Image (cartoon, rainbow, N blue to C red):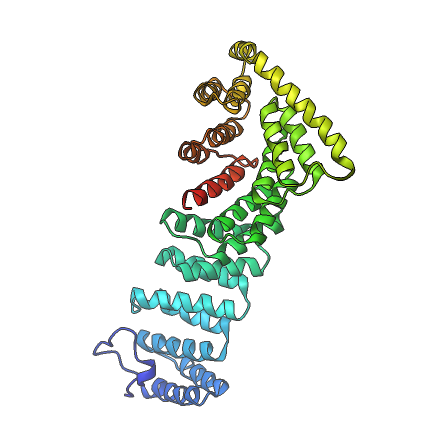
Length: 399
């Protein structure tokens, strides 16, 4: 009988009957020596010689597979190593922890060899048995991404990010960047905008603000009811600098039936030195005069507007009247009417909640605004805009 070389000793302590015959043990010793010398062809030849011996015991087969796995792994023969590991994993001789290590080794070898489909299969098998493992999950995401399976890469990356958020952790910037890359490939503009919001929340870099704003501008799912809010986010971010944009924003506020808000926004343009200059000054002055007159008219008609809104089939008119009351300095009454409008049923409850939050900001009730904005959901852009206002309000509270 020949003793088993130390480098290929059984993973589980050998039983008394677990010995190797000379016919099997000798070529395995030769394989071990060749492996140590990095002569992989000679080592595998010796393993094959041991495997060709007739009448082997189960222990001898097991030991041969151990040596075959070692030689194949070190030589980079992914297919042979995987086949050997699979036999070892299936054996009752192999403890659970060792099986998990082998599964991990299989998957890692496949990834290193750029055999990404095999890597995906191996990693998913490992995770099913071992449970969550951030390093292996990252390898799975990369395996999907590198074979251009962006849908599954995004799915696994999103799940990893969600788990970290649930645990109160901040996702790594690289995780959010990879998710954004997948969503770009999938043309998932709504998902991409939300990822940019998460990026700017955790890593407030100017380029992420620019990407968010661009995403909101080009998002085809942004409804007309949010166009004004997109302009206001641009104003808040300090990137609304063109006179035409201020004019468009003012006109949108007028179309929404919010003349005082339109006047406030236009005044911000004058205060910032954007309006009142060059060839457009006269047109801008005419628009401002119209807005001022409309504010006066709205103040005169607001009681009648309130009565009509109470009879309207949806809560949208109550929201508009309430917002106007807030801008006219009657915050308590205005906010109450807006809440009644939400309870009555607006056309889009998330846009309604966003506007209630912004009215609360206008009333100086930032804590209430943050609480309201956190309830905004959906995928039409309202949630993303709400999250950006939360960022602004939270940052302001720290200073």
